[in-house]
Image (cartoon, rainbow, N blue to C red):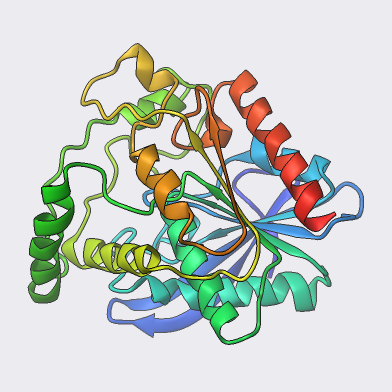
Length: 318
C-alpha cells in the first residue's frame, strides 16, 4: 500500500515485506516521486550508501527533469526500513540486499510498465548494485540498462598494510564475533559538510543518518571486503557504467576548508582505479570540488555533475 512519504507530496512510499532473518522481521521501503507528467525515458532507481537513506530530493527533481520516473530504495535496516529490533545497517553478506533490489526492479518494470531502468547508487550502494547487476548479467538476464555510480566504495582507504593485514584481522573477527564493533576514527566531518546546521545546505534525519555514523561491525565489514575482492578480480555488470567522483580526497579528522570541496570518506584514486573492473563500458568523470555525495555538493559543482550525467545518458540510452 502506498502512502505519503516523510518527504511530503509528491513522494510516496510502500513497504516491501521480506523473509525474516536471524534478528526477526525484515522490510525494505520503495519511495517514489509521483511524476507531474508521464515519464518519457523510463525510470531511475536510487540506492543509498552506508549510514544513509533517501532524502536527496534535488537529485530526484533533476532526474525527473531529464524525463525519468524516480524511485529510491531504503535497503533493509537503513532509514525508513530500520525496525526497532534490528542492528542498524548490518548484514553478513552483500547479497542479502539482492531480494529487495529484485522486487523493486520488478515493481518498477513489470507493475509500473517502465521499459528502461537506470540504477543510481551512492558509495556502498554502488558496490552492492554493481554486484547485483553482475549476478544477473552472468545469468544472461540483465535487469537494468545503465548504472550511474556516485562515489562508489570499491576499496578501503588507508595504507596497503591496513587494506591487507587489517582486512585479514577483520575477516577472522567477523567469523567469530560478527557483531563486534570495529575500532575506527569517526569525525563527523562529512556530515558537517552536508547538514545545513554546519557547513552544508541540506536537512536530513539525524536518527537515520547520525553525524558520527552508526558503528561498523566486523561481520558487515567482512562482507564489504568480500565485495571489494570480487570487484578487484573483475566483474561484468553487462551494461554501461558512469562513475562520478571528486577530483580529490581529504581524509581529515577536523574540519578544514578542503573538506567543503573534496571527498572526506573514500580515496577517489581507488574509486577511479577499480571502476574499470566493473565491466567493458565504463566512463569515469572526476568532478572538481565535489563532495563524497557528488549530487550534494555546492550548486555550481552539482550542476556540472548533472550536465555531465545528462550527456552520458543521452549517449548510452538515447
